[in-house]
Length: 68
Image (tube, rainbow, N blue to C red; front, side, top):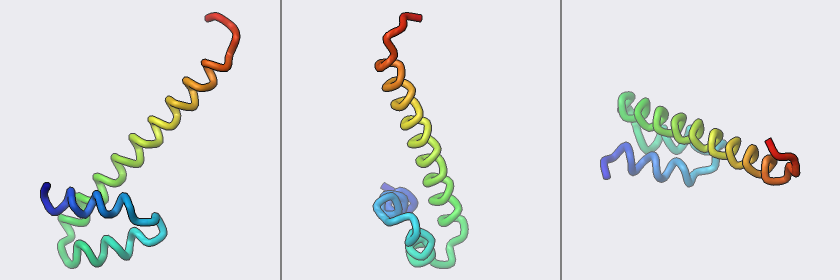
C-alpha cells in the first residue's frame, strides 16, 4: 500500500468535520499527495452515495407489490 492509500484509509475512519485537519497533518506540504487523497475520498463518497441510492431503490422495489 502506498502512502496515499494509507492516508486515504485513515481519512475514511476520521470524522468528516475533523478530516481537513487530519489531511493537513498527514500530507504536510505535499500538495500532490493531498490532491490525490482528496480525489480518492471524493470518488469513494460518490460510489458510496450511488450504492446507497441503489439499495434504497432496491428496497423500495421489493416493497412494491405491483409487477412491472
